[in-house]
Length: 158
Image (cartoon, rainbow, N blue to C red; front, side, top):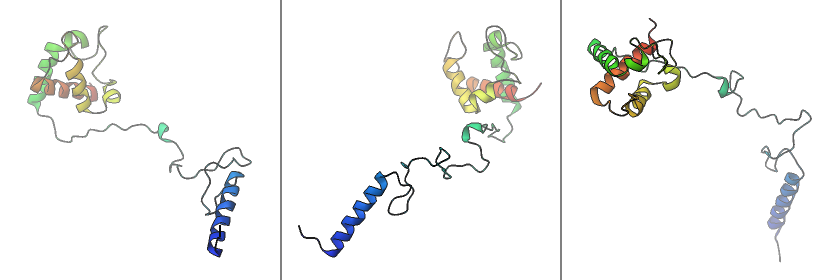
């Protein structure tokens, strides 16, 4: 085969680059960091690409739960939700939502906020799993009002 001057330059550059990368170099021929390079004297690679500003990883950050809706809930919904709660839920969760031996506490302080994070997720859980003796029977307005009521008692300190 016959190579021109440019062909020999390309071939030698590729050969040198492959040899340098195979020898455990810390950068390729183009100057980019080699992610497969061996660690330095400290025993770890110095990776500054994913360091958060506060110096802590994501697992150390706590999820902040905030009230997404700033629209006040109508009192009629709270009254309807309380009526549905007392009819369908109080036998297990207690009259004021403080829990019994059969079901957990729903009133503040409650794990509802940390478990569901949003009222929508709480409503989906209630729709699928509650009441315990007839799961999935709460639908429509009674479901919406009881979910709003439970969310309210879970975030409001008595």
